[in-house]
Amino acid sequence: MSIKEIATQLDLSVSTVSRALNDYPDISPSTKKRVLKEAARQGYQLKGADAAHWVQAKRVITAIVPSQDMQYLDTILSKVLAGTRQALQAEGYLLQVVAIDNGKQELSEFERLVKAGDQDGFLLLRTRVNDPKVHRLLKLNVPFVCYGRTERATQFAWLDLDNYQVGHLSLTRLYEQGHRDIGVISVSERYFFAQERQRGIRNAAEHVGLSIASEHGLEVGFDEEENYLACAEFLLQHPDITALICLTSTGARSAALAVMRLHNTRFNQKEPVCVIGCDTPVDELTASMGITSIQQAPPAQIGEQLASMMVSRIKGVPVKDLQVVLAPGVVKTGF
Image 1: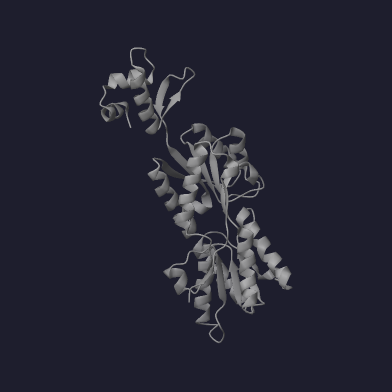
Image 2: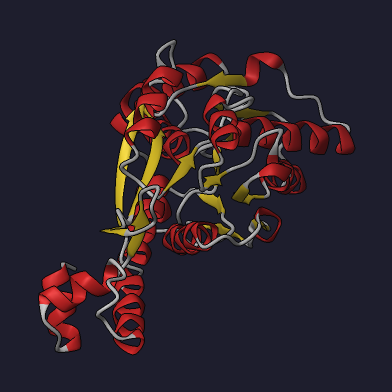
């Protein structure tokens, strides 16, 4: 909102609003109070060493996504960001999504973005083990919220799924259904959520006395076509596998498609491989593919909560009050 629009809103002249904002002595205290209250409501803030120059706040939140994930943004993150954008919009903020490479230039690219100062806060998605972006924002004391945790989780605001329990529940459910030859379709453990889900799977397997062979593990990325080809080859190489735990929704859909197509050919004499998708959305697509899903909350709802936490952090709410774990929900089956 411009000064002219504030003037119109309060039925004052532009000159009066301008002079009130700059604390001119010829403006009455009551008028100054009205103008300052409306300016603050519309996102204006003081700027400058003399604390007498008012500018409109940026009201922009920047979401950082690893560049490979930006190119192949999976269904979960897409819906999370949609929920975030809508909730931030209702609070008067604009959400911009920026992809940054995880390579050698990661920190320098991020540093340029931070120094540009074009945002009021950051949302970091898919946090990694020892994430350098988290370290930098903590040092600069910039408001931020992570979708996921790191080793320094006590020091910042975050919303995370109980990824350990997701992995534990996945393995336990398959074991109770009678599966003993279980494969795991994973992603790099540089992602903190993947590390935790793998830990849950390993501990659950150890608890029931089950050993998951190392050759029954496959690491993939976030490209569905590449994942499908890798999963199809993996299943052909290991026909003894009766169930798959997929750490991402992308991996689950790719694996389920490979299962469906191979079942109509080589596997037509046996039951199709069971597929569990960790945090895979329950929709018509996953239902038609027979994917079992372990999901804590609808992605859009998670996005809304991230937005609310981001606004709270900007307003100065302590980080200890903005650390939320979502417990695993009911396992849902497509068929």
